[in-house]
Image 1 (cartoon, rainbow, N blue to C red):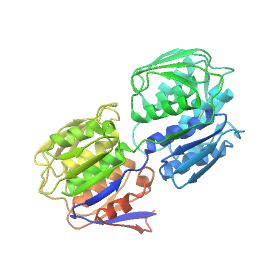
Image 2 (cartoon, rainbow, N blue to C red):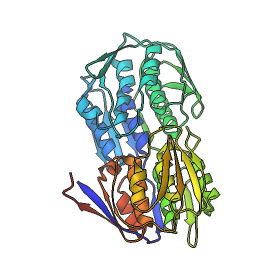
Image 3 (cartoon, rainbow, N blue to C red):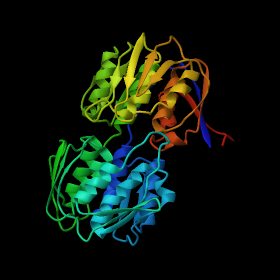
Image 4 (cartoon, rainbow, N blue to C red):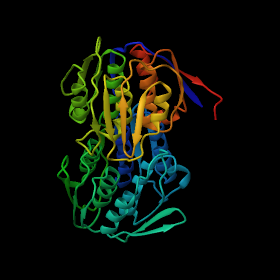
Length: 421
């Protein structure tokens, strides 16, 4: 097991490139199940979650090959429609295979999902959407079993715009007979990336980038290639890192339009930036952040995956800020660990009140989930002295070579083996 040792207080300086988006990759990869041919996915990040999804596809009989950042998937060899608990428990996004499997093969048996150790993340929207498309759904020994001779089009309305459910139902609908309308669909860029991939395969989808997706089912999908969008959460994390360390950096290979909500909040905090379509320059020398409230929401709102990082940022701001998570109500496991660095934070229900302090101070702290890990690294970068961040395997699920990128910007951070269990 590894840990990070961070000697904080060094401003980040230089130029860095954002990797492909984890959340987009984990939707694009199961979509390959639907193709009658080999697909290529460019700009695929080398992450533990990507490796886990590859193992899952391999267990179904597909072949996967990751060359540098080009992923090649051949799903024509699939001969098994059972996604086992041993793999699905590692990552909730594994549940994405349910829709494409039942749509193409008429049968899927997928373990109830696992993943981050926080919060109820219900799958009812996935299930109800697939039922509307004609799937028979049963629960057997911890597995969701879906059966259908042939899915049919339907009108589906989500009570809340779920990214996972939108992706699963969209993948199921493209091979269904007739037309499907998905109302209140998630508009996250990762869903648009998925929809564009399906269209390249031959799917008929309109309304991409909107909350109403209209699908006309087709008989088959063909081979295609797609480029994974840049990771907007990695980009946001790097921006906050520069702000917290009073750094001066340029971030390349990002989509500014995907992070407008993050940029707006950083600008409200007083940070000066210049940006165009695919890069941002930030100069935070002699900068002291103002305390700014944040409430998370579905895209284009402020992302829940940046909530922990904002709490870390506000921990060194000038007064008091309230951060409310409207997506996941109990996603605050990072708070006690940030408090070990000297942060002043009080949590009540789904909100955290953060009173800024002049300085954080290094300590030994422990990661509990992916985004919590990022917030602790940010705290360590800004803190005086040495910070040890334990259990960084969480971070390796979603950030590609983060310590190497931070090192390239001048951070004093190293990965160290530990005997901690």
